[in-house]
Image (cartoon, each protein chain N blue to C red):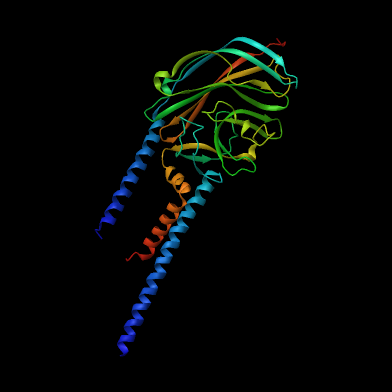
Length: 180
Length: 167
């Protein structure tokens, strides 16, 4: 009877090892995604190096679902730059073009006015009441590159969270149950 | 090893890699284009030039803008955004840029144009610095690609001056 117990023990140890290795694989995937994202933040100097366009205010240049690559850079913001800004107290970042720049003497403080290419009016109506200008701390980055359509995946997943969780669950299961 | 899932996965990975490579090459090919655009701007008339009640100066002008931006277009160009900005300095500000007119050029056929217009956006100084002010008119353009890196450049035209008196 001794060999039966041995076999059972060896099988269970193999499975335990497999389970561990699969959890490590899962952890590696999550960690490498995080490393890539943080690396991008480091290289671009912007706290969110990729943004998905969600409104049509910059059409026909940028459409809903396009992805923009942001870069902060040392160069000051100038008229014509496409910037991503965040109004205090609102969480949705906006991608619009700078149409006016007023740079103060000595203080380095820059006052910026933006407008969407497809909007008839400038953005003062979208700023907080009484706010006439954007300043450097509102700016999250400057758009330098562009990739069409890829952002739709994000938009669909944000609109349908169930899909997102099913997808993440299915992928996780797939990795965990994969047999080498 | 040769299940349907594996084959579909391999095919998808390959397709996405090729697509990414092609996007990258299309964007890189823009670097071979060395454009030679030209632009002229004339201020035909100062329509009015006033001090607002809050003591800001505002000026309205008629502009004649002509430009040839055809050489900016390549096969990877979606559109060119072009705008004309007035740029000047004041004792308080080291740089002020105000966009006066802008336009979207959708294709090469429309890239050689001539337009007679008054300023589309208001030319207001936060203060009363505009009398006799010397300023530059700068034609900026931003090339938006179908995919990849965006390009921008400008032509600075110097030696414009606003009138000494309100009118």
